[in-house]
Length: 410
Ligand code: HAM
Image (tube, rainbow, N blue to C red; front, top):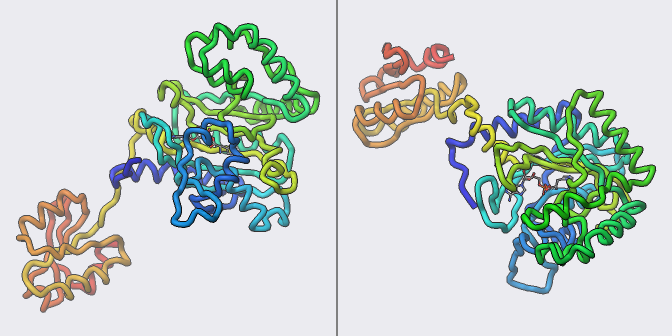
């Protein structure tokens, strides 16, 4: 886990502000959910067999082991669906459009673009099965990435069917893979029986030729799933959004039905090239024990989007420090300096240098801080209620009364 230091904040703020603006433009409301969730919720939601739960979830140890096990949330969707029911959002006009941003936790080997504490911008539309919401989520999140000026982002799209058509497809997939088991990596040999869809996540060299010839889910969709997917594609075309059909895109979480999608940026490289992804999850609510309720959503990886922006050399403003620094020179001037600060804050940010170092040292620190003005004041000036106001860019300096300062800085 890493610290995000002030120098990184401007890029993060840009990305997060753009996410919130995109959501508000489409009428999405913000929600906050806890970072801890019951293990059972995550197991049922994300899938007890998924890598995320089997290998990556952080369990929280408690003093008493009598109550249910907790985990640090590896993603937000299961928690948002829980909150939707617990908070009575299912009683409101449907669907409910929600977004949240915050840290998620997955215990994987950290590397570029992959962290154990990472941040997501998460969007969920709960309570209506129309594929128009799939297209809306894509249009909004596509707009978010495009608005940030990221180059080389592609949208990959697939449908993975539903309870009506997926079982027959999985059988076809197993029937294709079983006679070829000898050629597969041991992990994939296990997947053929345990979780056949995960075969498409495999990056092992030896499995690629087998994978390339596997039956395509898009050829096995039932008529409802096929019609819904056609509608998503039509709506994206109407919105002018380019996409690539990727029949091997299955995503790493178990709750998806029908539409799945991912934004990829090749330059990020390797397994970390997904800037975000999502899809429809019409079976999730029932799996969690709530009334069957459809939903669709997306999560963007903020760490990766920030990394992509930095790699592109996007011009970002430096993290702001105080615009005016008050530099009292001499003993016993704290009260006067604090008052100058108080008077000027209406006109912008102000910090006071209360340290005991020399004026020269204070001036050097002020220059390094990047402030626009300094207000220098010794005891005699404090008694007269004036400061020497210096414009750091021009070097121009003049005396200013405390009463006039705020107006001069505005
Ligand atoms: P996900 O694909 O697991 O989906 O994660 C979404 C994004 O989070 C990824 O595309 C990636 O950018 C970022 N991400 C995931 N793991 C890490 C990591 N260890 N370090 C840095 N970034 C990471 C979900 O989480 C679903 N809940 C999305 C969703 C919402 N589906 C429906 N609603």
